[in-house]
Amino acid sequence: MKTQLNRICSGILLLSSLSLTALVQAQPLVQILNDAQAARAQEQAEFDQRAAEWARAAAAQQQTMLQQITAERDRLLQTTRMQAETYAQNDIGITALNTQLREKANTLGLGELFGISRQFAAEWSTAFEQSLISAQFADENPSRVEFLNTLAASGTIVSPADLEKLWLEGQRELTAQGQVANFSGTVVQANGEPKQATVTRIGPFLAMADGEYLAYLPALNQLNILPKQPDGDILAAARELQSASSGYVNAIVDSTRGVVMSMYVERPSWGERIELGEEVGYVIILVGAVGAIGFFFQFIYLIFARIGVSRQLKNLNKPSAGNALGRVLLSFKSNEKDIEEDAEIVELRISEAVLREIPKLERIQPLLRLAVAAGPLLGLVGTVIGMIMTFQSITETGQSDPRLMATGIGQAMIATVLGLGIAVPLLFANAALASLSRSVVQILDEQSTGMLAEQLERRKKA
Image 1 (tube, rainbow, N blue to C red):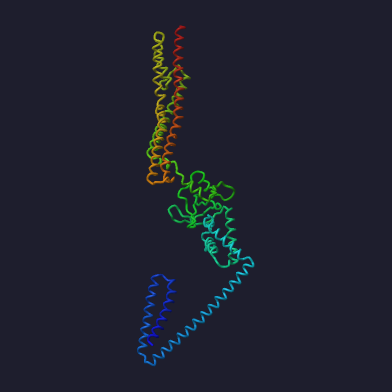
Image 2 (image 1 turned 90 degrees about the horizontal axis):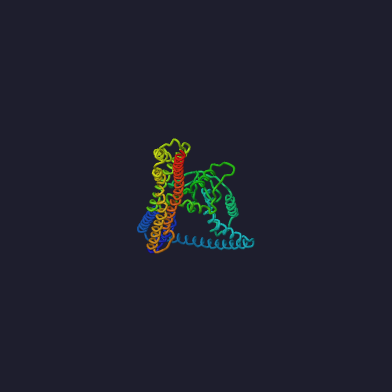
C-alpha cells in the first residue's frame, strides 16, 4: 500500500515538474531558480504533510484514502485518453482540410501565385535592405524588410492583405527611385551621436543633410555623415540643392549608389600626398620654396630696373645714379674730356661700368638653374626609397598585396611628381629672369657704345 502511495505521489510530482518546466522557458534565469526552489519546497512540504496524515490514519482509513487516490488516478487517465482521441481526430480533420485546400489552390493556380509571391519577397528583401530609400521609412514597425522576410519564409497561404502590401511596397520603391525628397530622419554625426536633421534624398543614389553628404549603413538601417567630405563644387552642389525651393539646380548623382562617392572622398589631399613623400618630399619643397622666393625678389628688382632704364632713355643728358643706365652714363661723363687722347681707356672704363651692373641683373639665375637640375634628381632619390620600401614590404609579408605596396609606390610617385613640379615652373622662371636681364644689359651696351661713338665723332668734326 505504501508503495502504491509513493508511486502516485511521484506521478503527481512528475506532472508538477513538467508544468514547471513549461513555465520556466519564459522567465529570467534568476527568477527561474527562485521559482524552482520555492516549488520544490512547497511540494516537499505537501508530501511530508500527506505522509504524516497517512501515518496517523488507521488501517481502515488508509484503505479509504488509497481507494480515493486510485479513483482520482483512473479518472485522470480516462480524461487523458479522451483528450488524446479528440486531438487525434482533430489532427485527422485538419490534415483533410489542408488536403482539400491544396487541391483547390492547385485547381485555381494559387500555388504558383503564392510561390512567385514568396520568391519576389525574398528578392526584394535583399534589394530593399541595401536601398537608401529604406532610411526614409526606418520608423515603420514592422519594417518593410521584416515584412518581406516573414513573407518569404512563410509556409502558409498568403493572405490577400499580404499580397496587396507586397505590391504596394514594390510600387513605393519604384516611385521613390524617381523622386528628390526631403524627410526628417536620424543622422549619426562624426562623433557618433545621433541627431534629427532634414535629409534630402536623390532617388536611391545619394543623400545629404546640413550641406554634407551621407552614407547609408544597411546593417543598421541608418544614415551617417561621411567622415571626409568632398571639396569644391561637389560640396557646394549639395548645399545649393538643399537650399533650393523650386526650379532646377545642379546636383551630383552617383549611379553606383554611393560607392564612387565613398571612394572619391578617400582620395588623399595635397597635404596628405606631401606627407606621404616624407623627408625627401620636404627637401624638394624646401628647394622649390627657396627658388621661388629668389625668383620673386629678382623679378621685382628687374622690373624696377627696367622702369628706371626706360625713364633714363627719355633724358640721356641728365644721367641719374638711381638706375643702371644712369650709372653707366655717369662713368662716361667723368671721362668725356679725355676721350680724344685716351679713347681706348674710356671704352674699357665704360665696359667696366656695364660689367659692374651685370651681376646685379643676373643674380639668382644660377640658383634657379641649380634648383631645376636638383628637383628631378631629388625626385629620383625619393622614387628609389619608395621602391625599396615596396620590396621590403613584399619581403616581410611574403605576398605582393597591392594594398601593402601602396605606401611605398605612393611615396615613389609623389617624390617624382614633386621633383618635376618644382623643376618645370623654376625653368620658366629662370627663362623669364634671363630675358629681362638681357634686355636691360642690351640697352646698357647700346647706349654706352652709342654715346662713345657720338663723342668721338663730335671731337673729330671739331
